[in-house]
Image (cartoon, rainbow, N blue to C red):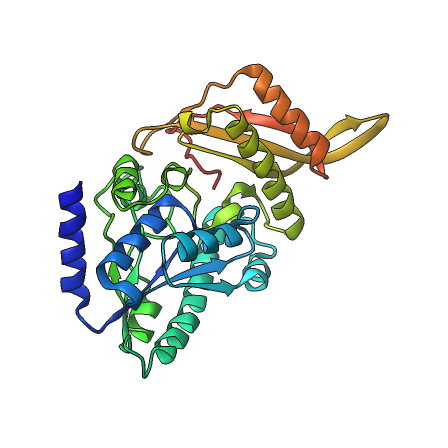
Length: 330
């Protein structure tokens, strides 16, 4: 793996050259963090990481990512506030693929703005040079899931970081795509991260999709539903960690079903959202099995979510394998 790192650093330096700058999206997940750290090692401060606050991040996500990348890994980071823009464009949209497309297009709009600003700021500095490359932390399973085959097994769903760089970014910014992790599986990326000196807690962090909580809300994305999903997810993950089983599963999260159900709280009838808990085990993310919880722990998690998250009436656990399901809701 150390040989792979050194070879990749040499390859990146050869591709990028001595003057060009690189921008890349980061989310705080292991894939984008490893890709960013690799780029930092290869070209130093000519790499600029951009974290887009899209309004659908996890609780305190932006603050945590900023501290990790800037303070601990020494990476140049720009935080672009796009929460209102994203939520405004998602208003009234319920179809999953359309949500992904809107989120992707909005990301591009913000990246264009930030790329032009960063390039201008670098003028008259030792890092002056055109922004020529766009870094993505695409993994091999992302590529497979986004492939389109003839016949019934057509594209499963579009990934936010696959399928080629959108034409608008190619033509307007003249950016070229660089994907140093595209031939790796998740376990290889984790080992890659350890070799780069990234902290174990971050290396073992569960994946978080680029579209964020938006694809963990079934139906329309609203500020109320985002707040509910965020709070429920925070309780779920914190209780998993307290139980010492976080690293036994590959991915876990709480989603919101936009349908509502009747419940009882105290002596009153309530009508609230349904929380869907999802936790899976997998070796390669190409297939996955539901994690087998201790039932008493599941009950305690459910009780806390229903009691502490306003607007929730019920809590369920999704036991669907992949296939036929996907790991994310949408």
